[in-house]
Amino acid sequence: MALYLGPPVFAAFVWWFSTGAVLLLVGSLGHSRSLRGVCAGGLLTIGLCGLSVTATDTSVAAAYMAFSCVICLWAAQEIVFLSGWLTGPRPEPCPAGATGLHRFGRALQAIIYHEVSLLACGGLVLALTWNAPNQVGLWTYAALLVLRQSAKINLFLGVPVTNAELMPDAVQFLRTYFARKPVSAFFPLSVTLSTAVLVIMIQRIVEVSTTPADVVGLTLVSTLFALGVVEHWFMLLPLPAITLWGWGMRSSFPPENNIMEPNPSVNNNAVPPVHRANPEVSDAPQTAAETRTGQPQLVVVPNVRNEELPAKAKSACARQRLEDQFRQTFLEQHPRGELATARIGIATEPAATVNGRTS
Image (cartoon, rainbow, N blue to C red; front, side):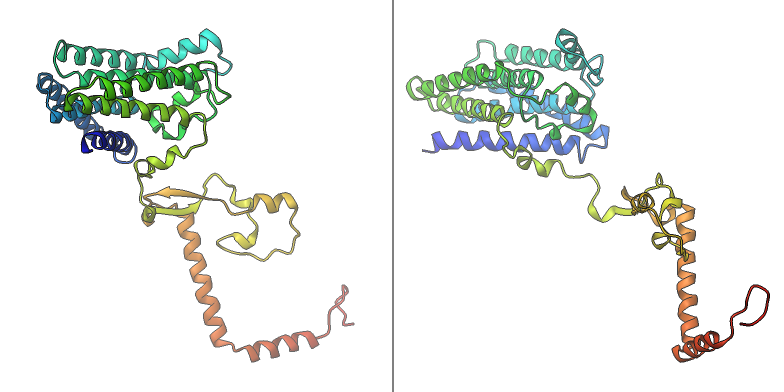
């Protein structure tokens, strides 16, 4: 039973964890270029060395290792690509109004270096496993390459759900090449062919595989292929794909380091007196436009210390504190009864006319 249940669980976990780990490294933890470079180089080295060692081994452990080594190779290339280091000669957004061959040419120029690197790495995998008894690594890489190209073509031609929020900042320009619209004729064709290949793989597991290593290897690859088909359906159905890797896309600044402060682009003169740091009494009626523009506008500024705040904001806060202290001291020295008596005395004094005579 473990021979048939272990590989699907392992492949699904590696697929989920590796995707989230790459997003976490490139997004939240990837502010250090050296860290990303070391991780990409280490994964590339581990993958190539592991494939060369396991190519002649036909054990069950070798099948798991070959599968994992190819995932390491793929993750290394994803780190380089999503970091924006290896994209294309024109890593720019799609021009407005570009259609047809012009749009296709610009999209190809945006990622052609990455496509060449995928083919070159595939050539290395083929060379390391040529005529070797363990072909799990080659099958795994071929499955990843075919499914990735199919997904890219579908995103380019048009799908209802692009899941563009998964793209890191360095490659945000690629979102302009995604077409959010009803699916093209290529989508049902690609899904149908992928499903047919998956059925053939399952059939070979049941009917052709004779050794435990063959069963494990084909089960790993078929599970990965099935997950790739599921990713295609993510582009059609409103499935919560973002929730699978939300842990790898959290903000790089912790909530406690976010400080709310006024937006400096907002004109403070348009803010009503009641919202100012130094309130002033104003009897003039406010128009509707002034009321709308006077709404307080706040922005989130990460990692801002008190000494980095603008001088105007500091002076306004100090002035407000002084006014509060003066108001409190004045109320303590003049009880409410004395203030009421003073008001009555002022009200009983005769009012002066324009000519200076009493009325």
